[in-house]
Image (cartoon, rainbow over all chains, first blue to last red; front, side, top):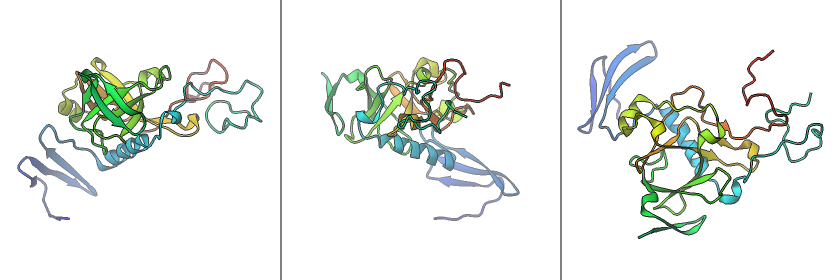
Length: 96
Length: 155
């Protein structure tokens, strides 16, 4: 990894078209200004990572059988306890 | 002239050329530049966004409006500039589905919807704070009445 020291107002150029400007430093926070060609997507890393993970998780769905054909049905009111296949820890039907 | 491609899930798939959607920037972290929407579970609300070029690459998606009445998309300014989409309601909208064995654990990504507009598709970031990365798709509704999910302190 290339490591550079820059002061506020100074820039780094990546290729011929991407310009990163150090806008300011305050405590542990650095403000960066980035100008790049329109086709270059710029994300905060944590958001990019999170969306990437969700996309991969979605793409891991094996086949059609992995998807329900209808919304899950709640057990009939009163028949809460012994419904073995419906996890009661999820959402609405809190028995107590 | 129809377009055919191979799918590990569905075998040989035949679609019309106009059903191929270009994704100039691919999907975030997955890439892919051409996808098609396949309706292999008719009536279920689930579609498959399938890569035309990679037989193994496909994601289940749903139309968020069908499951989340109050869903709104506010596209990040950078994404608006990059995609040229100013009015997402002019296009078709989908969100990726994270399928799980228990339907109640299925979540969808409302944070990064896919907008398809004029034959082009883009995955954009939704700045709406009430659009989580993992929104439960189903909630059990034992009794008709209480509004969905959020337990706003009603009492």
